[in-house]
Image (cartoon, rainbow, N blue to C red; front, side, top):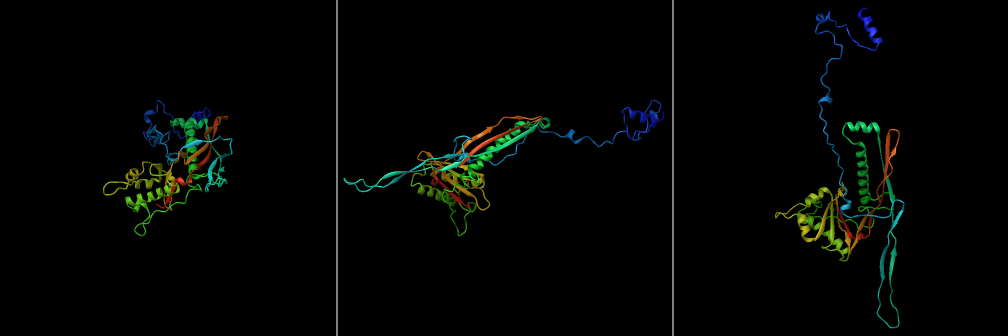
Length: 337
């Protein structure tokens, strides 16, 4: 049996050596040249994966901070079965007249109104498969846990957005677009054209903030003053300018904390805009009542985990009323800083 017949016989049995030229036997091993044709593919080096280090740490991609809750607290109102929330507002009315024994004179009364906010229910959904999890496990990633964490992160981020901007098309408003908030102020112009804080001195920035404080004091008829619980909300770039100091190393923040007994600073990325950044000065409460509340019906409702043939699915829901503003006069803003 010659070489080709032998190779055909081996191929029938399942042994395939394409490209082979001869058999190596005890009788011919010394006669085979060292540069004879290879049976295997030419060497191309060690596969890159065998010289690649895989770091066991998982780097999470960061998103902008969700700081709406730093301004006002959250409160639960109802649950996901409610379609609306109704709030009661009572305003005293009337006047007085000179006294007389023979008449009753003027009347004192109350005006009761019932503002309404809608309950917006939203959802998100995750899905993961058996093989998908096994493959991710090879990379030391717990896929199911990461997707559940992603759902919680998305809900938290969406809630923050609705607290600040409301829900389009519904009677749900956020702190930044509440229609009853006084019109935004404009920063003072110095040296005939300078309005941006980055071009102003420490004293000039401080004076702009005092302008907002003056609006709060006047609109509240003195119920808000320098002793009130105040929050100054600023975008990240403007927050840096609060550290701008005088030649005597006195910064804007130093001047503010010296005058206002109880002021807090919050960084709010949503106040940034190409047309000009906005800052807000807010009294968190007036006469013991909160200025506003960030209201929700459901923080996060996790539905049952549904098993399929080789995968799982789960839905998560939440509900929001946006920012419920009780005291619009306790909010002052300035745009174009």
